[in-house]
Image 1 (cartoon, rainbow, N blue to C red):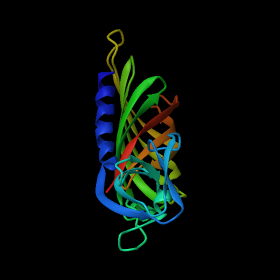
Image 2: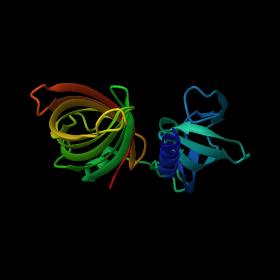
Image 3: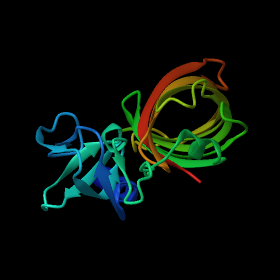
Image 4: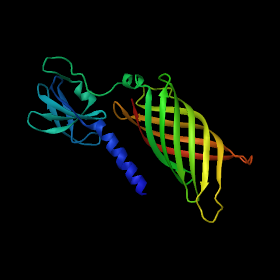
Length: 245
């Protein structure tokens, strides 16, 4: 439990830079009005419709929402599509800060961390990937599965296919192989290490959060090729965060 708390704290601190302050930019409303919400989401109520001709300062970005401040000192949040209705002091269309899908395609390397469950055992995972092209990438991962009776270390090498890389919520599929080494924890059972080969198929989804960060959820079905010719199947699901560079 303590490890989970530390991990979540680390993840929270890691994501924060993606929602930090941008340089202040002042823009003018040129459409009839733009709607300002009390928070960064559709679920937050609209507290003000700012009419044409008014100026606002863009303070910072959080995913597709931007914190703004009016000339009267009112602060709130507007969606990207609302800021399209503004121009700069020079009369030019306001170029929105943030990311495009090209930012992802230009970055070959990806790293991340995930946590989840495997047949009742806790799973902690770190991985690194290299994109061969926008659709296909190779990935290496190291996982530790901690159960009540044993601890297993799982090493994977896999190919990952992301057929729709331009989607913000983007599914992917994986096929891989590796090894698993298991060590017995219980004092009632004779200590014995066991190492076997594995193969797996998987499916998952990426959700892009910012220019560099994304969430990733994944489900994998493994076959463990036991030396006793009694193959075993296990399922692992994980969720976590990653970054491009």
